[in-house]
Length: 167
Image 1 (cartoon, rainbow, N blue to C red):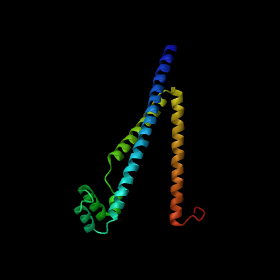
Image 2 (cartoon, one colour):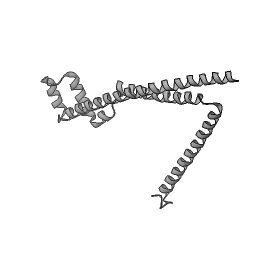
Image 3 (tube, one colour):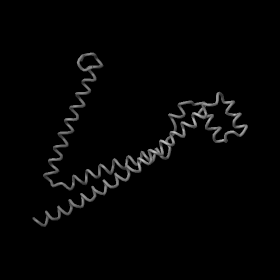
Image 4 (cartoon, one colour):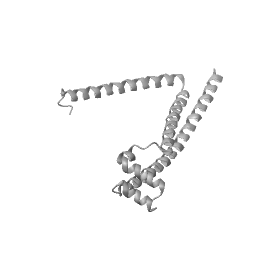
């Protein structure tokens, strides 16, 4: 019996090491997310600067003249025409950049690692602790569902004008 307990303790220790490894990776990936977010912010600022430069022209003919006099490059010419024609929509509805896609992927990986970390921490618990944790989680889930139902009911009452004290 004590041999089995010793094995479970060693196994639990392994799960806790896995959880710590996940925590380390999450910390590093959050640092990468911050770096990617700074890069995205710079890209947004550059797009805004291009938009402002394109909007300095009053017509497409002025953009063509600037290109004809070699004041802007061919790439700038087509970018400015696109921005001029589409306006603010071109700035707001751009296709995702590599940095934005990388940030999205990194955030998904972080979510997966956090779930794995919770799983490893749960596996390290004794069967009694696991049962208690499952009961606690179920109780918390039911309380949350009741709270959401209450908010929806208040929202319905406000929408129908049934509740003067809710507003």
